[in-house]
Length: 198
Image (tube, rainbow, N blue to C red; front, side):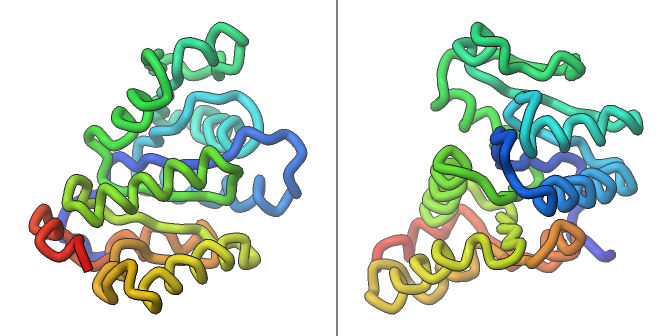
């Protein structure tokens, strides 16, 4: 793969549900494998179950580097992954989201619930304003994100967003395509605020 700049650290937004279908866990395994093969550090929410736990487990089993970021109140109810040594406990959810973006080379959104959706949409909003300029990859496994993608496209159709804003994210059908999508993502810069308004 050719890259303008090496990818060293990727933040992954994903769920902590214990009840999800096995296909989502297997896809997380594929993402972990690609990170391990390319010496990429995982930044994630610090949880021990669901896709968060699975990603961290697979990375740690093979000696990968994992950084967890979690609000203190989640630690207090023992949600933190005990195998992650590099874990930062922050004041609240707002600080957590800010820390997710610090030093990351790309964002990846695996399927998830309202927390994952909220994190993803905030990152897209920041990118629209030129405050975050790195690639954003949406893993649309089995069409999970189809309704969200359609909604974003409708925002453009109804002129709440510009056609150019569709370049803020890339959609892939599985985690095996994530790194290629990152390297192929359109350039974005801080000047995006000049066309943020429609």
